[in-house]
Length: 268
Image (cartoon, rainbow, N blue to C red; front, side):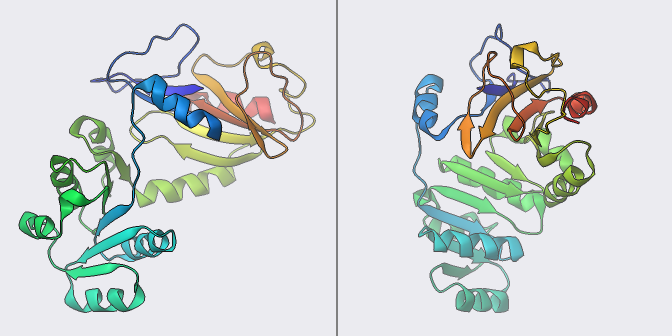
């Protein structure tokens, strides 16, 4: 189920409908059950890339936790930290990762550490510009996945056009977690889509909700909103027009931010 797309070279987010055409260069977000992932790759002409070797730039709390979690999942991790004392401490705390003391802005250092053999490059230093530039260097080496931690929200609009796969902002992540606790209705999850003017909300349907007992096509849903899927009794379902919503369902909705109040009222 396609839930949002952005045309190449534009900043406007489209919530796809039945008559929406896909074009080359579109950035599209889908919701799918696990079994549909392989089919989705075929439909979009993409190749599923295996990620095994990961280089992390920056030994901050984010870098340390990322390295620790990846090592526990048996990824091969290299972590580059500029501060010598911190690098030694990280080496003690991360016995399964290779910790290197050096300046990640040095392209020669990255080359010496076999950057081109990495599957993913994650830049989480305290400097947004360093993170972006190092990711661009990684992209020039044909690294499959690049991720940059940034503080400036203005950079989010640039990520797709300059070629970085994913930008992460700690303030935005924290705001999402706080925001869902103050929304109306049983909002159990909320996420802002990277680089898009769209929100994903997950509601728990109550017995007296306006949507309870109605099929999706019977709902007076805003044009700039769509139901991406439903979780019922722990099973994910791609819900089409004839699907009837029941109490206890967890409904995933994607919409433009200005439509959130109307969507909330439907799930009250």
